[in-house]
Length: 424
Image 1 (cartoon, rainbow, N blue to C red):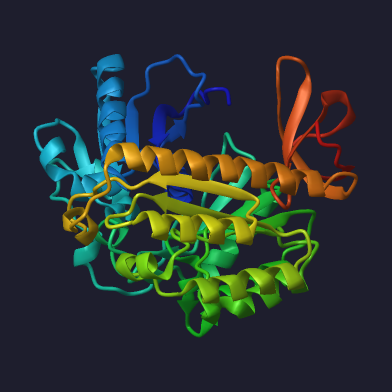
Image 2 (spheres, helix red, strand yellow):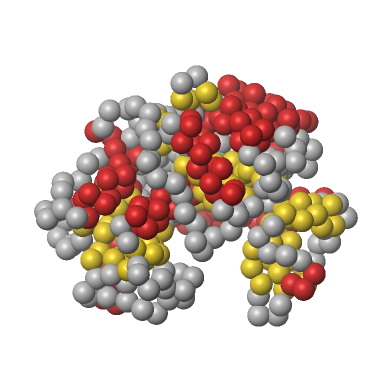
């Protein structure tokens, strides 16, 4: 994007989850209203403002967020640095002495007012505010992206024993239904071929009696055009089975994709994690999804080396993951997160054991990923091509999240097209 002569340059560094991407899009809209435009990654001009939209899901992510802010400060010593997001809420000791404007997640909504104030305000933590549904009073802008991440929900009440997110994002609450639909509409009318509904726990969405299924039904039935909608991470609770029926109702609009966070395949560990389902529940959800939505891509997260994980529990988990035959597997070695119950649990697993288990799960994940891709061989898939490389090859993704390539001269970017898949 060329620099508009009348606008001031700003840069946003986004770390972490899709919800942060959605928050960044909302910040982009607020910045536009303040006379700024957001630079692309290739921009060389010094910005007048840098926002670090931080992550704190792990201690390493929080450290990476601080490093990003310090790097920007070194590159642009005269630029105002704003440090916001999850790390701003829980990493307070490490950032206390930094000369940055520090804002909690909820303060992003008042960004313009805060930036124009003379004094730095105190951080307002999400966990300390009243749990009530909200309006953003902004719409997501995506000047450098194909996908539009639409924020529909915030916060979590699950309190998994390893997770810091309920402390950084607060209690579960939902964005106003009318604003969600309006944001989806403007993203599609602005040319986004794919929108992603996102939140901490999207399945927990509820506003004035309207749930996630109603959001999907409304946008599919009232917004015209050639586009598709993808759901971000979802919970595999049996209460969410109706979601599968809604997805199946709109095969030409809703992506055949779900990321179901398993975390572990052994019930005794799930109980220690304070996950609210059993492996039997999870298997029923998976089987129902595959029955209702053929060729659906089912991905998951899995943690290796959770405190107290025995060899037997790991093998039980490994075999369950194999049985589920996921299309992709995000493997994480457990790491302590200060402030969570798991960090002080007894029988912490040694690092060398965690590494071995991590590698074994990664190898399984790679095999399952290849198997799923091979199963799509010769099938016609709806694809959106997003980029072109130096060899003039276009790269894109199918609705069921298969990486697809084609000669750039044979396809159009940023629009839906049907393509027979040939695995490379």
